[in-house]
Image (cartoon, rainbow, N blue to C red; front, top):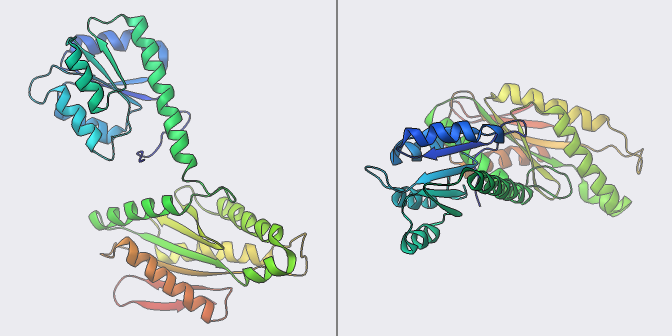
Amino acid sequence: MHFPPAQTDDDAPVVLLIDDCRDVYRLLDARLRSESIELEHADTGDAGLERARETAPAIILLDLEMPGRDGFEVLRELKEDRATMDIPVIVLSGLSSPHDKVTAFDLGAVDYITKPFELTELRVRVRSALRLHRLMRMLAQKAQIDGLTGLWNRQYFDERLSSEVSRVARAPGPLSLALLDLDHFKSINDTYGHPAGDAVLQSLASLLQQTLRAGDLACRYGGEEFALIMPETTPTDAEAVCERVRVALEQRRWPRHPDRTVTVSIGLVGCAEGCALTSAEWVERADKALYAAKSGGRNRIVTEHLKGPATLRDSA
């Protein structure tokens, strides 16, 4: 299941009306104002598809009878597009035959309201669709959260890295990726027990959340390994962020093992002006830098700058 970037809790949900009749938009804009939604309007099927991809609305109200691309075609394309397929669609139509209704539901509509519609009924059905949308987003997000650390999980990391790599390929700009691996983590579990190891993982996750900037993304990559995606960040700036994390973790003292210092090795790769690597190649380069950090004595950052010839530089 895929959702476009989520709105914040403070944003009014966007409801997109795709209908060639301007009077319907004026009517709904006036009567649904008390619902604390943001109503947007597209008067053709093509414009509606474009707006749906741009704004990621909470729900779509779709007329079936429009010039050019009709509502059935629009609904079919919405449900075939990964970016819009999970948006609930309520059909508003003057077509009332059972065949039209069955077709709309088969194509993926969640509701069908026949024009002329009763506004109270429409309001209730819009509320119901908004509840469905919120529930679907919550379930999708929960599936992308690591249960132990509360960070994004590997699945979400893969999606976001692919998106960021595509972005800098289209519009060259800075991007950095770091892989972090706790040093000698197995010995912590073996010596002090798994609760102590879990506490270390949770503490590093908390440290990342406190240290990273608003646009940065921290994920649990797997086991004792974490990943940081830093959009709009040169490798030099990313190295400064990673160094704050490395130093803060090294200085932390642990109730279960106060005499034992915990450190982290970091492999960092980044570009200042974009590059043509795939997301898999980004991970491969970061993993290679991480291996160099481990081989070089641990508790250090090794950085590869992706501008010009690849060069490994050890920050320790």
